[in-house]
Image 1: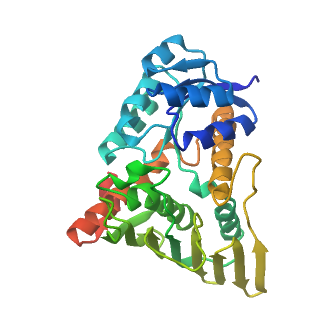
Image 2 (image 1 turned 180 degrees about the vertical axis):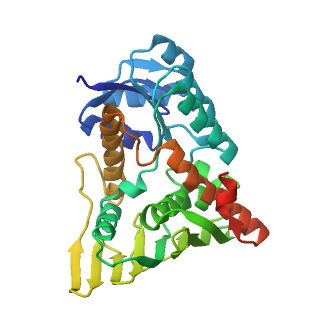
Length: 344
């Protein structure tokens, strides 16, 4: 089978990582790019040697010649672009957050289902090497049945210098970062039945919340805490690491700062280094995220060729997106939210 040809729309900050990763992926290449900003279009086109350049997505679809569509724009355009891909019978990857509302996300999933095309959300955090190592340990039964967890991302890193628009939204940390951490919690401990959330804005220069604490009740009876912050000053900056604590019936797992994984059970304690690879185009400390971009893109290609569902399919991501909406609802109302009711 020949390699798959892709088209990417959105040539902004994070798309550079996606383009680098596509160069490393086995079995696919990007043949066309699209952006309304001519400078960004030229910059990415020249850097990656892409000759087909468009300022209009409809024109790019009209010309065709690609097998999948990678949407790397901001959330406002996601529904229209996913539905455009569905109309053209082209499988699509959509950057997170998936949609503006849960209703939009459901409509996007249904559009691709009706068109018979694959839809995957670019939810790359679960593809990070340390997160995969934790999942592997759980699948091997290393700590028996997990009953409690904590998923923590606390940082003082200046994310606004590279993505200034993050300071302008009424929603910030849950929508931008918490969405990843909530997905990790789902990935490792299973789907969520209800949640309770509290938020705070510490930084007076931004509009949205920069701290959130979320208590999750998982359907299997486990309880977990997701805590995220961009207002936490630590002696050693942990960005962009997600730290994990899991307690199970037969032991514990601890993923600590510096990518150390410690597993304690009846056989004793095992300590291992689960650091991500520093890819040739990556840079610290972003290399953890950058490697996961490559991993999820390779997964996209492999599953597309097999005709199999993707780990972060649109349908799967609805369950993560519902947690984001429920967290904001809970924080605003001061109540516990029934997540299952939102997905009916």
